[in-house]
Length: 135
Image (tube, rainbow, N blue to C red; front, side, top):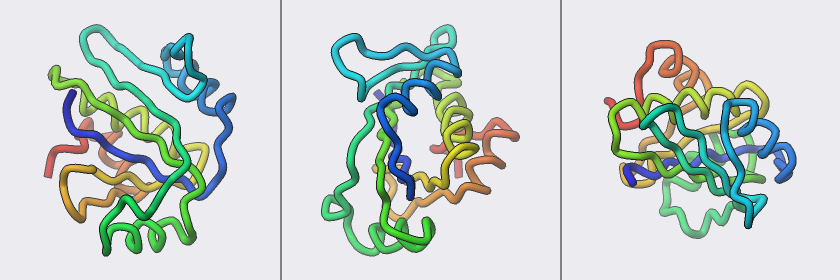
């Protein structure tokens, strides 16, 4: 696995809505959990874990920055675990952009303190083919 990136939404996303979006991007759902899935394109992989957000797990000022960027407290959290294979990071941004097209979202690279990606930045990176780990 590579950098875990969390997507925070200010909307409540149901497991069915999560599955619909993931499947529309060529993903598969975990047969044992409606809260987990994966998208693979060749050797590029991104695993997804749908959760209820717990801002207490985020250090300040990250929790405040996420809340401020969203315009309110997150209602849904989607953690992406990104394969280390080349191109997987860019695939993760493309997939995050697909979710951002449906719901207001910000992304946070969980291993880089203070690295918050706004919806516009997610879209820009997706169009330019830039991953979350790039500066």
